[in-house]
Image (cartoon, rainbow, N blue to C red; front, side):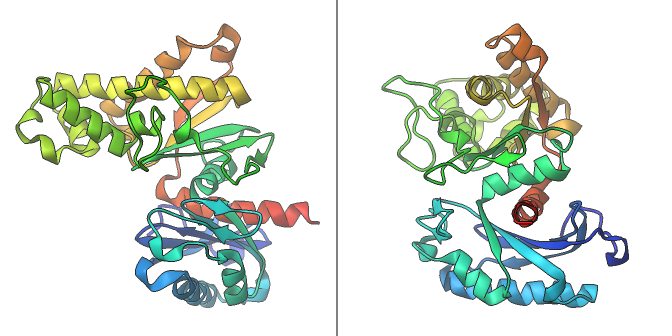
Length: 341
């Protein structure tokens, strides 16, 4: 299910592009027009243990179903975009060692999908694809540059500067969650197990849960202290909404950690806009707790930057939600198509 309004094919702005967003449990597939409007959408299971070839075969079947429902043929779609998690070699079209896809390691996924679809495929890290989606038709649509941080189990990200997505020499561009915000020898370890002092260790859902358990075990007073082992970021948000002072203070502290990382990112690339996406938004723009969280990020950034940078930088929540990945993958395909003209 997509939250995007479905645009009839008769109102579409040609040409058309497919976007495919691969996740650990599900794959989202959407057909978009040249302005980012969604014409149709379908979701299928990843079925990770069955391997990537099976998944790409089923993606092709799903794409054909979308086109049939729209009364279109593959000849009317010029290019597809693919976003996948984990380590990649973008230029070679290879999945390397995605941690949540152990049966997909060292796989030529772009060639496999191109062979299945019969069309060229553009490739991106899933967080970079989400960033491009927000940049193309979401929170960043009136900007030329933007940084996205995706707050989930880990912290992903994407950087777009002057309309160009930063991929990097090692296909590692935009991995914002792995910047160092704590250089001390006892700094926390991030979710993937090897990064000490990384932003992800402090501001991801896994990092938040680990920090919260440590504080509660040390005696922090909270309604959550009675069942520490079942703590989640969502439960911390719910407790804050109920007026739990520790939970609200803890969420604001998480915003402070994010602000440290954001300040470093802004001082490096000066994007003018920083967008916070992902599921761990503590209620997001529609809750008082979410707004307090966002304001703690903004205040932490303002305290650490220069006056002109503070005045020229906006920090906002993302607006596309879980749809950003497939929309951004289609948008990257669109960008590659137009560059080749």
